[in-house]
Image (cartoon, rainbow, N blue to C red; front, top):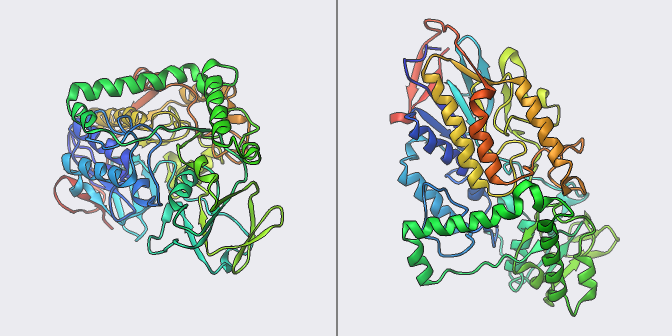
Length: 512
């Protein structure tokens, strides 16, 4: 590897969704233009490029599901996927990011080179590239969870997963089985109902649901929100509303006023929608504390369950034949299509990547099935490596977290232009932080039931247990006291170096 030029730093960003975009913008703000965004899909957007199922939209209000540095003229209170993709395209164009992208390129290995003080990245095609620092922006929702159902392979009908929807499949007048009643199912079912002949919804366990209150914005509202000051005022109003309920983790802790109010709202909604269906009222009422699973936000899902052409099956799907599905009660039903709204391997962070750090240590070996990180961002013995949307940062306002995380990573990487060649989080700080974090989590309802928050051992590894403001403060206050900067002499040269690509997005390729 060639030695780094003075005041020059190259960065690899893995993932081209909102996290990757936030990282790119913050690198630009720090004067770092030599970065490449590796994206496995054919276009930008990450999980929103891939998740194209009917009804896909955000749970958070539109004015919170965007970056503070890039307002947008939304048409709805909550954003549907096509409009969200338009926002992604707007960001890529506004910040001139397209030349930095390498689409249809998956990274398989990220390995630290101590002598060269940088990382060697290997792609799925076997190419190798060298960078001084790496930001992983693959997030939590990049590895779909496929169900293990006996006979699934033999089923001859259409099989669709919400993370890889096939729009060539026509569900009109079809008998459709939907596995799951989580957030994606709550969006799919109301959209498919009315088009399909019959929809069977298989529920393994009910989830707490709150009315979403989504609607189109009026022409007057849109005009007002185009005024920057009013846009920011509305954003602040929505932010403070969210923060009030989550301060000190109150929204997630049984017995608090915030948690109790949410639970009461959910129960009243059940009573209202299913007033004439006590059987369904009992079936959709959870038996675990509010917050034990991700709360579903929908103003249409429960309403769809009372339709004549929709049937809620309060049992999991247990098996398939060539033309039927069988639930755990042994009832068999003929169906034409199967929709798998079964989510992702959210707790298996970086499952598609092999990360090798100092002294050849492998990140997955260090984690041993229980992912952790300092502020969800960085791990000891893995210098110059940062994660966005990493362990224990899920929940609340993800766009706010992505901004804070990308700011943190960009500031640390900017130090590499000075007298240090690597930055690494301290082990003692990391241990103390995660001990404190798990103590806070123990007081929440996250541990009360089966959910996607936990590792195989039962440890909660995905959730942040407090408000966004606290997380933002910690990323600012703890950053400089938690990391060590090291200066290592580099070799004069270690083989040729080629630069391919265009402009600032050129890739540094490791020579032979």
